[in-house]
Length: 287
Image (cartoon, rainbow, N blue to C red):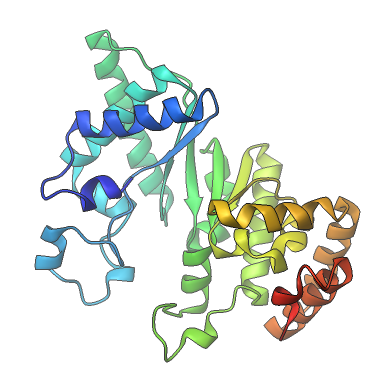
């Protein structure tokens, strides 16, 4: 939703939020809409943020931290999300949550705003699901604790890889160290899925890994059933999924779980993809 800040000079009003959310709800025609609260910071700046640069923006006042530090703006967004929930199936999630207090503060604000809307006689979904993006190691390691206070998870792989490996993916000098196939990333992703399953909440995955055919079988084998990607990646991912069985994927996930280097992981994933159809997936199985 940060585009609402980036496309104007002034912070969006409650009506600006409402207009955007209602357009999305109408376009989806009854399908669920998941709204991520503002994810400003890091590489997405407003004019005001550019005037006060941070030394290390990826570790600075971004995402849920930015929202909690600007409660007036955050309140407008939460009000609009709740109001929009009366017009269609809406879920809401907080990005880059790193500790339980951030989640609880966000939910407390949501509860207070819900009471306000009740008093004002404004309709909203009182059972709107509230989820968390798991994209930093601290949240991944405490996934079971977060699962007890969340309705769903979304694993944000781009930031999870970056923070787990301490690699700035935008820095050409260290970009080669940004490895989604790193065993630590695989381990964390699998533990997040396991925590969600144990708590009986939904868990999806987004980011570059979701749209890479190389990882499709591994993700299915971990237990993931919902992947978020850009539209042009959907056909090839569908082709992989339709070419395999869950049993195949689970065997692969168990085998990969014993590896101790990203090269081992990548080699195993390429070998499995090559077996499916080397002509179709040749681009992804080349070294």
